[in-house]
Length: 446
Ligand code: HEM
Image 1 (tube, rainbow, N blue to C red):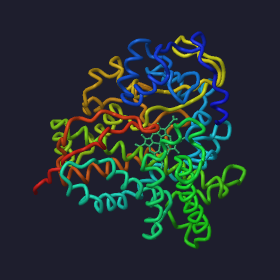
Image 2 (tube, helix red, strand yellow):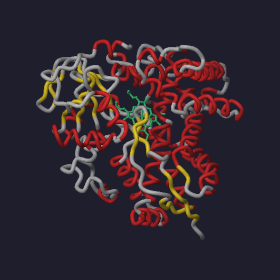
Image 3 (cartoon, helix red, strand yellow):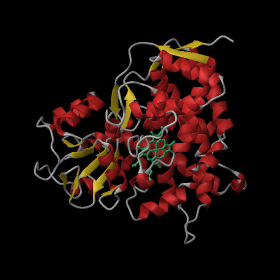
């Protein structure tokens, strides 16, 4: 158990926002089966700040579900701090990664990591990403009613291997793909949410043993890649993230050592691969189920505009954000929305609910990209990438990937439903379409 979990205060209804009375096991199950619906029922009952008594929290997870509470959790860094709150993910991403780094170290580390992810730097990958989407298109178009998510996972993994790791050798890329897919893409990370003893390495057949073996394989490959790049004569001319991070220095001239790089690279893969693939799957799935929206978007793209494209990506991130929440811990005894919050409690900016607040978003359940045209959302009403000093650093890369996929697919085919609109399921911290986001792609004739 990490420090964050041992420090967590036990449940006391006088010290936490209101919670349902159902046992933890029942609340956990309801949350897993219907993450948006169950949280929404709690919000209706208790208002925008409430407690969720669910595993793995011994006390409760304090949930913030309107723009004011969302802003407080994401931006009031004196009261709500990040890093420790990601303790659950530390065995996967590495305790030294940015995601798990608390203040005051976090800000300096973030400054080192940000430059390679800047929009202008990422833009130089546009052609390469387009080529990768093109190469994958036949697989998607050939199926009749295919789940988009596994296809998009393969693509986003390849993009990360190329853009972040700078891998060009097909043999090494294949080895990485295989190891990462086994580690992340097969439900292996669910181990992190098992009770403590079940996470331990109890031999090769135990879930904990499997987790550690797969993790070791990924880290060994990453270590080799760092060593190879350190020795590469052409490093200064390369644009991949790893090459730039090897030369990054803070104001005291210090850079990242190999152990830090290893954790950062693992963290970047885990943060950037499933999230982007899930957003791609939701967007195509939603378009297939909203033919009028889809046809308007295709017409707009055909006319050379990207106005509706950007609005569609925003709307998909509103209605079905890939990440379920942004986590913090309370740095002091405090309050949120008029309710007490004890020091060290886990606090979640539960933006999938804020995104459905009818006061912020009229007819919140409708998929209507045009609501974003010519207007900016009210502050902290739309935060699929989190916010404040911990906002996602991969936004530009994710947007480049999502927009390129949509442009290329919609130029070649029209997504149509291949079954009912899928509900969301919670897998680790990602809200995924229950059956992978199935669509049927009808090829467009010239
Ligand atoms: C559609 C795709 C993505 C979504 C929805 C997403 C969402 C998020 C969210 C909600 C957070 C937490 C922010 C907070 O705590 O306030 C986050 C953090 C982060 N994301 Fe992303 N992300 C995506 C893609 C990526 C990509 C492509 C990368 C990099 C390759 C990336 C790297 C990170 C990192 C390193 C953090 C931690 C930032 C920090 O703690 O300072 N993400 N992301």
